[in-house]
Image 1 (cartoon, helix red, strand yellow):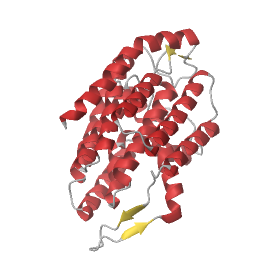
Image 2 (cartoon, rainbow, N blue to C red):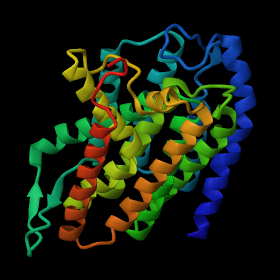
Image 3 (spheres, rainbow, N blue to C red):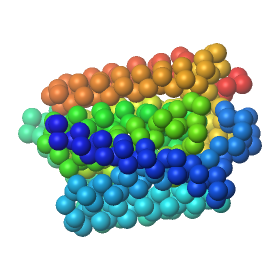
Length: 342
């Protein structure tokens, strides 16, 4: 396990040393996030697009540490499509439909490389019968990639929140994929976690730069790739829930947001101030306190996912369903399905 410390530190250092230059270039080229509505927590223009430093670090180090093959090349192409579309959106703006099309394209490229959700096993079948998805594997994979890619972007509302939560998710995925013997995936987890840590000192409150869609979409995409490569290609239906639980903070916050907007008669993609971090701020917490609380929740989800992955599939599934019901009940009780103004 110690051999992953070097890739982790390399990603951390490479990202960290890029950040002062990234901030200067962002200011010079006009990559600025100007607060235009009350949803914005910051009140003055902040450089945006800082996620490009993480993209550069992870991409270079993937080429350095991993064998060059078709899968790696296609993964890099797909991730760069996501990053470039995010970078363009940070500067000029990109319609949601066009961003979604780029995400579908990236997902299709992964599928061409063999990265798709092909089957699960039935945990209640003593013979471990396979549930083959066949042609359904394509839309299921596209749905997963696009969904996870956007969840990180949707929680990127406070200084350090998305980068810190992504780091915790990557670390949680590292331990499970390492235990499963997916050492190549574990290395990518280490790179993503290291890059996030290198970016965090410049993004934590008060932020000197935002990652923007460049970073948020890229991190979401990489976490979706890791989950498919490390978990969802495994013959165990509980592996659906393990990455969902690891990504619990962005996934469940996004799910509650979409249901809340639907119940309110609004578009499911319309922005609001009902996200969990908005509600914690409304309770009187400051940005740092709110972010630390969400870090803690994310870490708890990660520990639970690691514990669940150690049980027999049928037991793990029952525990997973129980955890899911508790999360839903807690969210409903906390008013996550109600508009902030209600």
